[in-house]
Length: 247
Image 1: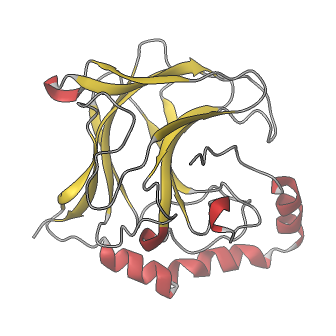
Image 2 (image 1 turned 45 degrees about the horizontal axis):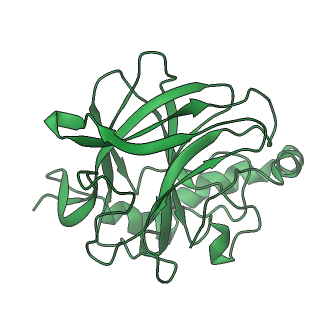
Image 3 (image 1 turned 180 degrees about the vertical axis):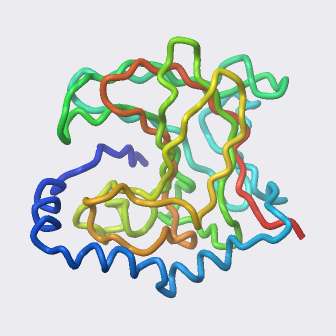
């Protein structure tokens, strides 16, 4: 089962034009933060004592050197790569040199073609949560954590994205697909942990349809890391886990 996304942004220019004509859209965007869906997600991620790795939250530590998620809690998806059709490249594989003294981590590297517009969107890797069915119910978790670093000659910029029922075309809901909820991250040259809470992720502005208030944790499809156009990248990822509130 292959669900390797292309980018990105069909219909973006049309939406930009519509937004320029309809100034009230700004108000709508602001109001959505107080919707029932937003309040539910905020409540889910309100952890007075902080967050921790969930007991059954292991996604992948790569120590088995394969390209399948850790088979736990119904998750059994496989890693895949993606790239635009204008010369961008991507290579990925579990390799020696994991975080915190572990043996193996996922290594991805390549170049992305410079350009503007929707076609030169870049490259990246990702993983679907399940191979049977479509959605994975992550509503008991509050986010995802992972460790990452960038090589000395690599861009440090990467976008971490969470594809769900409203943004992934396989769900047959979106008409402007691929604008997953996510977070723009800046890696360092050393291993560092990144905690991304469901309450904090956002879509990119001005494109995508629909544009719901928040990601839908109960109907997740995939996660991915995307590098934009005109970059040389050499990145490592390790120790992916779902997060829960500390008791």
